[in-house]
Length: 397
Image 1: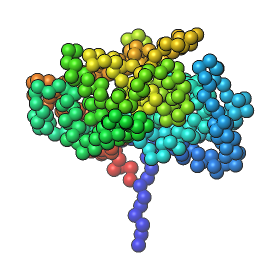
Image 2: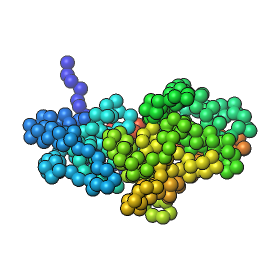
Image 3: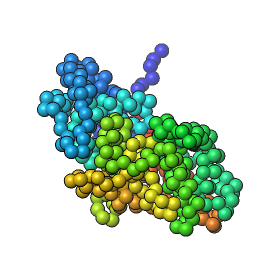
Image 4: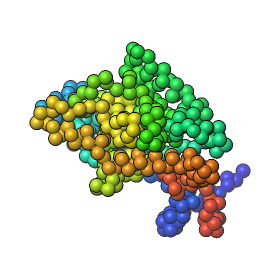
């Protein structure tokens, strides 16, 4: 039986011509970097090379013996460890990344920090987050009719809390951290772990709705509900530690170190106007990634939309300026402030007193979720959205 002819490959020149049309139509042209950039994959590739494998094992021994310096000490890495890291500069390990929702995230992050010994001590550049630089969103699966089940006199934070109960996953994960973070003798470690699970796995629109719900300046009940979203009574220390000591604790933990680097990368203000180094949604994702770590931020009061770390700069001595810079990277960060304000404004539109405004806001969200050109997410092939391709492609077979 004759085998059917295989399709001919597109000529390179024609591919370049069609590339903008492919992307606009909803196609994603994969690159080797995106497919092979996981630190787990890079480590397996390194194991196949005796030289790379030996160098990695040496760096791993460096990581095992490394300690985070005290506030008075300058961070340093032994010269032989830095030289070993340089030997891997052409390895895919040096550009590998991890994903926040991957199964073996801890192992992936350990690999990342092993091959970046200087960054392990807090020597961050502004573009070295260990997490892959993508934002994926699942559609907001909310029937607009459910808005009518919310009482008009409820504050917006209460409305978002009720909307969470309508979603099985959000409700289940919220109850889990609520149980872990309640009671007079809560275990902070367990509470923080459940908080991280919620903000990693709950549908992002619901998680952001709970955390960034807008409140009227005089509505302290709403503001209190917003502040209590992260269960500060259990998740945060009862007495505010020094901010530099808090950072030192964070740097000693690969997960917290990774989330802090991600925040510094994506919530870095480029100017005094609040222009972020990356898009607002990426900054908010990095901010939420810190919740449940040693560097958990929160709103400063029930009547304020400003956020800050639960720490102080008292007793910082000659490191007072460095401590204040760390504290102000949250409390006086124009990029973060603008990102939170924009998200709260969007959330306020969902519950406008005019039901038509709510319907319109939801339709906009649904339109954004359905249109790949309006948001970064994995591309879904859609050949029929591009008539020109229908004309060109059949002639190539």
